[in-house]
Amino acid sequence: MLNIMTKKKDMRALAAAREIKLRHLFFELTMRCNEHCLHCGSRCGDVKAEEMTPAQYHEVMKQIAEDFDTKSFTLCITGGEPLIRTDFFDIMDDANKQGFLWGMTSNGILITPEVAKDLKRTGMKTISISIDGTEATHDAFRQTPGGWKRAMEGVQNLIDVGGFQHIQITTVVTHQNIGQLDELYRIFNDMDIDSWRIVNIDPIGRANEHPELLMTNEDIVHMFEYIRNMRIKGEPVTYGCEHYLGMDYEREVRDWYFRCEAGYGVASIMSNGDITACLDIERRPEFIMGNIFKDRFKDVWENKFEIFRKGLTCGECEKCGEYEFCKGGAYHTWNFDENRPNVCFKDVLF
Image (cartoon, rainbow, N blue to C red; front, side, top):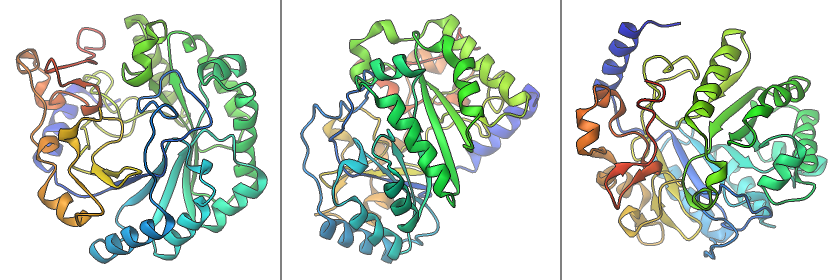
């Protein structure tokens, strides 16, 4: 376990060396979904949005391949549920042929043995599938009877096909499922997955309509202690990229130090062609940096995104002794109307 002085030195060096370099480009293929999750930040399934055609994606990817080394970043496919598109494999076969490294997030329920084979054929390298509790909890949380069974079958179908670089399960922890972590570990430990990613529910999107799901301070401490103890045992458990955790937990529950990558290493193209940073950020007009049908992505990436690169701050943040490391925390949980963070672990973890 790294000591606090080493962590502070490393984080200062990281901040000083921070560069703008595209590492993850998200393609939001659709806002449609075959589940209706209680925590969905994008309210997928409720929001109608245009969808780019395979021919349009071809032109977008061709342009990006001309301007960037396609092996220098990961194309991250998301939604909604990406596999709900009947032309999904047309798009991803094209991406593979154009040389993109790609992975995806999915709820897993459409991954039959045949789909798993097609994912391998079209070059998918990584995938993260959502399992949010034991069977009854997961199905209620995602409002999908039978969803847990089908998602678990989807994971196993990927394992059976083999040849992927990384198969991950992601669990969103809530006040209702936090007591199921040990049972979930026993289930996942019997499967040949590569990692288990644990994240806390955030007060965004539909989660704001379900305060009973939001975690208490005790829940939060328990979750991080659980992850840290599992990692001490050598288990492939990790926390997600969200949130600054204080010196007691930074680099203890994941392999890196926190810094919000929105606009620095992460950009996204929405299903209608709008260009933004992280797709979890509140969808406000000021966060649309351009549109792929009018603007060249490279120009937008290099010359826009100032709103994300200037950092977040408020009076209380600047008084905090950890502000030099946190810089206001994650953009997706910042309250832009009141200019304050909606999630801050000060006085909870540090």
